[in-house]
Image (cartoon, rainbow, N blue to C red; front, side, top):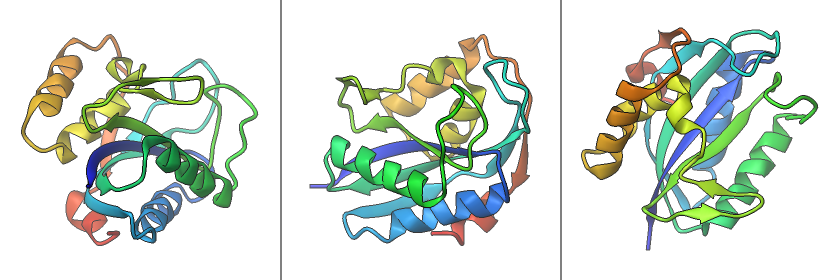
Length: 168
């Protein structure tokens, strides 16, 4: 049985668009994962107070037969293959892949918190997510969170949905 999953992916080191494109490509290589939709790419203001380059962010909607922990493990493999280094909390990174939704399930473990705890405070998660979520409860929830978010950081669409669909 396939579970619908929403991911948020960001990059602010190196060729940010190439990092996002490669992360999406690596997702498609697993037979247990079917990438359904990719949002436009947005350039976004960094959060967390660390002085750093702006991010490129997108959302991915996929279906998977992997368990949430197996999917998280594979996301970490992708991050490691793209040379992700965890040196500064909320600091620069070549790639960051986060599970926002895993079906309608909720997880709160030391390594996995779903729905993602910070999504309500992150326009760079909510705006792209709205473009890939199908109609339903999660889409309505994300729209409501976006309307109420305290985050007023800037974001600008820089790569349109037509182009990123070619990444699948």
